Image (tube, rainbow, N blue to C red; front, side, top):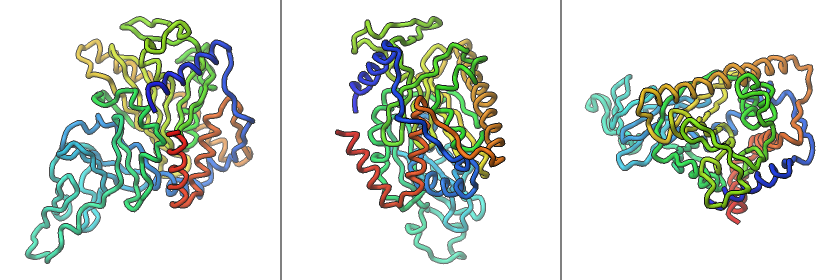
Length: 409
């Protein structure tokens, strides 16, 4: 995939916008309401999707320096990410091989990590280098007691890991070339300005919202405005999707001014990069990326969604990343205002509505929910959830090898 792919997508959007059309799904799709409320299905999805498929676990700028680490729990799996001496990223089970105690919490910087239970010591490449009181403990082969390693992959300023140490699913195959396109954002070298974590509804209820422009002028009339667009065309790369508004116009932000540009009058080579990556980019099963402008420069909010403990719970970490660290007090204030605005939109509008929706669905009186022909993103998402939840490990490899081959053709 290349810069030309971005041009082609943009030209497709321009053509539809000029004709006042959009791409439709073949038909309305009906999804059982129980797929949002069934606890057994929820536990199966956590096992078959979140503990088996590659997940985008951090933007690279969260671990910018050698020695940086991050610990997090995903669906009951304690994960440790480290930036190693050679600049590569390691992904490990955050459990000491002695008794299983987690080595670290939160984030920090350390070349060695000492277990707080008995004092066993590991390097940040996962190797065991010290057993406390070895003369009393007894002889052990330290090389066989390294931290359990997970498959990990870093590309385009993002880090993926698979929470199955025995997985043979190639992460690059899983991304179907989408990782190359994500490089257009230029996240390599960006800075992490701020982050926070918000509670949300069922993970699929929450993710539906990221794949839906239909609701924007209704639910967000007081924040985005009632005249906001509600159409989206979808570009798919395996289960990963980009959605963007069909329009011949784009908004280019220059300083404090917004410039409306007519793309039909612009040569391909003159289209700004921020226009080529406009819209919402989703990485299955749990990531949404959208561009914004605040603090005097380009920024993006990366939303990282994980299921919670119960079927009606999820949590989302919002990362606000910026092309450069804001220097002036005014730019810092502007960036915070942009990030705070996005919190209101998601917390008080999207997720508040999602929680009310989930509570109503739990009555069991609505048997199915609908995704219209103009909601193809949601249709595709639920089809992939069902397909991958029911696929065997071997079938997973075949599915994504085929998708990767198709994307390359």
